[in-house]
Every structure is written in C-alpha cells, then in structure tokens.
Length: 219
Image (cartoon, rainbow, N blue to C red; front, side, top):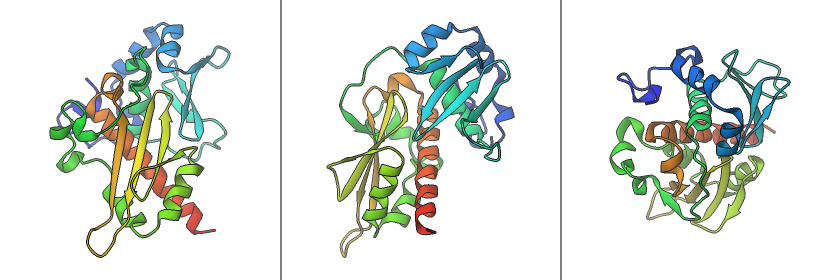
C-alpha cells in the first residue's frame, strides 16, 4: 500500500515523508530485475537508477534516498508525489507489454469510483488554459517529447515513464459545449500502478503541461 492510500490522503508534501519501507524494499531488490521490469538502466558507478520521465532523466539513489534531475543545478525541489510515483514504479512495474488499447480512468478497475471528488484526474486546469488554444496544447505535447494522435480536436500521447503512456485529448470550447480534456491510459496501467499513484502521476504530468505552456507564452 502506498503512502497516498493512508488516512489523510493528500496532506503529504515533503519527500522526507515517504514511507521508509519503500526505500528499504528498493535497496533489497535485485537490480537487474528492477531494470528489466521497469525498462530503466542502473549506473553502477553512481549507484542510481536512471529513469526517463517525459523529456528528462532522473537519478534515483536508494542508498542516499534521493531522487534528482540529471543536468539540474539543484534548485528544483521535487515533490512528495514525484518521489512516490518513481519509487512505486520501480517497485511495482511488471514484466508485461502494452495492450495497445487506450482506456479512460473510469475503465480502469475501481477507477470509476476512485477518480472522483478530491481524486478527480487533473483535467480542469487544462480545460481552462487550452479551451481556446489548440496550437499551444499540441506544441506543449511535442515539446514534452510526445507524439500527435488523431482524437478530439487535438491530441497527443506522452511517455512520463517507460511503460506508462498517457494520452491527452482536447475538445475545444464552442457555442454549445465547454472545453473538455480526457486523459487515457494503456490498458496495462492497472497492473503497473495502484490507483492513487496513477492519480499522482496525472497530477505531475498536468503540472508539467501547464509549466511548459507558461514557458512558451513568456517568450
């Protein structure tokens, strides 16, 4: 059970609050097995897993219980949710392939009940920002190393983690309907991550999309 499954879900902010048993479990795991299951690399010299996340790579150091972005100057503070998502992915990723079938959150087992209220998937801020701006929405997807897909008015598919693709579909606002964003997942996601970590992952990616859009707008 992940930290976000505990009573008081959502109160965590500091990576130091991560359940220490997750780090202990990662330290005890067979490195080759973790790499094979999660499709990541391990740097023996540095003692870290190299994990691609969107368009950047992060180092996860089990011994020092640290995750950092390669090439970063250290000024970027990673969140509790970021630590939780990467740690859970390393620990829970299964040696299975993609189904090739993209599903919505409500189609994931238990998702129809879970992804509601305070755990609704991160879409409203995206609808507000991109409801009239398909061009920037697509540009952001491409800048985050995504690929354009053929759904809605504009859509793309991102790879926040090597075995976890996310699809983003935007329907623009018009005279009859408000804008709408739908997040889709490969059908295998329910074997790779628990629901609360899927929710946290979508929060992280949604935040990255908004930050990227902001960087475009200020240029």
